[in-house]
Length: 272
Ligand SMILES: C[S@@+](CC[C@H](N)C(=O)[O-])C[C@H]1O[C@@H](n2cnc3c(N)ncnc32)[C@H](O)[C@@H]1O
Image (cartoon, rainbow, N blue to C red; front, top):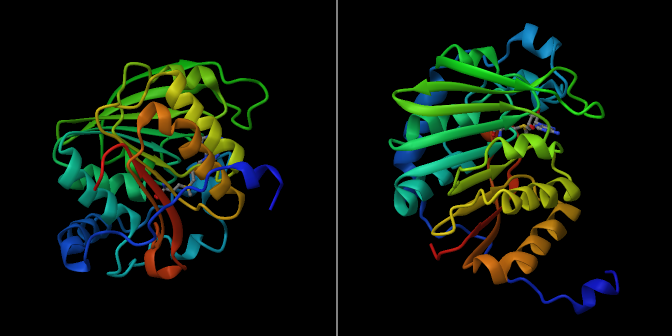
């Protein structure tokens, strides 16, 4: 423990979700059906041109298409939270990869607007299931690992607006492209570094991207120093946003039973 942390107020949190398995069952069913619609998430051509291998490490590639099992995942939990507390959702996912979580939420949420933010181009497996709209492009900063132009592509799915921002999280200019949005559900699942999640939150604040009436923010893989950043965000922004609920819990992720549970952090500015 550093001497600095001795002077920081402790953030208290709950480590179990306040919903029973029975309450989650309808969302689990819907989401497993959505996943069954896609046999193969991997487009080798897109992978060969990617900058970050869509965040899929070699050891996970063989299990990406396997059934994820019936234990609840973060996707099931988000679908429940939306139906119960948000109804109409403006969803931002930072780090979308091949689109497994995104696809399930595209199907699960009846009234929703979606924005995906990823350094890669949209996975063609996902894009082929959407109706294509216009695309705008701008320069990517030279220091980025992304070497093509950044872009915002519009799609629709079942009459719902779907946006795909292909850009580097570290590029402030790309965050500015989302200005005007008031996201009430944000899922942070991109870089998994303590610095990156702090930076993301600063961008959400800078461009006033959070729906101040009600929001839920979910972070995946909060391990080690990532937890320090999570608590730092809560301490720093509690006065502005009035954070009511804080969870740090273990739950399955995008490949479900094919790997161990993920450490997931959740905050909301209203109580569940
Ligand atoms: C773990 S995957 C996301 C999984 C997805 N959320 C799901 O649950 O199905 C992480 C993603 O973050 C993206 N990513 C990594 N670094 C990034 C950066 N600097 N800017 C934007 N996206 C980045 C990767 O391309 C990858 O697609």
